[in-house]
Length: 341
Image (spheres, helix red, strand yellow):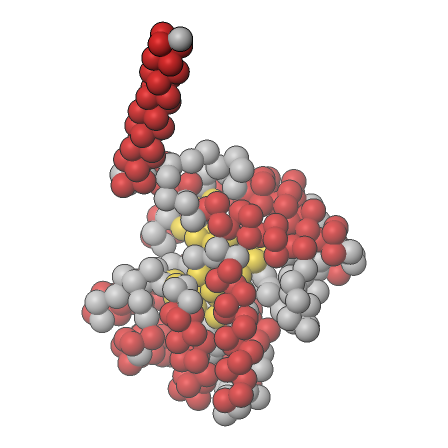
């Protein structure tokens, strides 16, 4: 009898000690940084608010009751586990109070901001007169220098989102490939210097472009001059095509890839989708994308207001929100991990 009790106590002690050291091992892992070879597996993750943060910026500029809408949208994005919220408000002085409301709300929910606006004159938004390259660069530098309080370390600032849609035009059609490259590089360098001047660690080389433009513009030399980053806004028929396109752009450019925009359904590409079909497409796309080590960031377009929206107009979430959340929250874990979720 005594021997049985002794064996039982010894077994309990062994299990207890084992659990103690397992917990200590977990604590050790949590306190240690991600090993250098695995750092690229942690990605920038974002949801875009363009339909509300840009398209109705003038309409809601003085409507302070709209702050309730901003609050809910930013809170919902934060709940997905995103590292950033993408805000498309123009950089002109007119819209600065509206932009500040979005940014302030993002800080409240501990989100970094992916500034995906532009100077309105580049694409003649809100009937602004056309501006050229030199005027654009000067305006961007002025905006950064005059608005230090808007930015925090870890933000992303797009100087010229889908540049091919404004200014001198699309290099696929105007024959000015060299000029387009030079403009992107010059503007990146000037914006980078401006952020250094105001003492903010903000990435300024995330200028997105159409996938076909990226194939034309982003050769190895240009990619290197832009900090080794290629950002594409890419809408395609299937997750397989999306993943293959990103791999091909990475191979050609030898750069890291950021998916600046993706989403479904785009009606003339994917036709209409049920809520379940949308969720399944996004799930497969993220599964494939997160297996590509060169892909360091993704931004889902859009939260509300378009055919690709993942929340209903009444504020309720679609099934796709849970899919995105499952990837984004796992992405935020601090431990080294395999990208297969």
